[in-house]
Image (cartoon, rainbow, N blue to C red):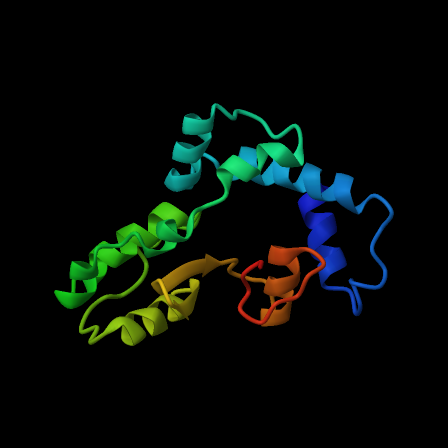
Length: 167
């Protein structure tokens, strides 16, 4: 079983925070290696950060730090896309942050950002919208996780947070 699959199964267990495996850190590091190898070429922002940092493999948790997206990555779409109803451009922007193709989001007659988010969800893309003092942030979430609490556990390890973001 792959480390990613093992972690997902563990996160879906009834109480993953109380019964962490003894090798959790090693399992998380191996899962990070797997995901990086699988998704680097599919997520343009990740590939760019890896090239800039000179990271080709994940050998330690320290290798992950330069790959973290700045909050500006999730707010990097030009406001003109929303202001001018350029929803297909929003699809392309979202595609730079996700390994899932976004061309299946129907943008016909989209009225506003909420409508576009609904269409993204209908197409199987789960985008988390967070209002912060720095502005609005849109974060792609895993597609078939099963629950919002699962997203928090998988995204933030042992620390559950209501926003799905790690503090």
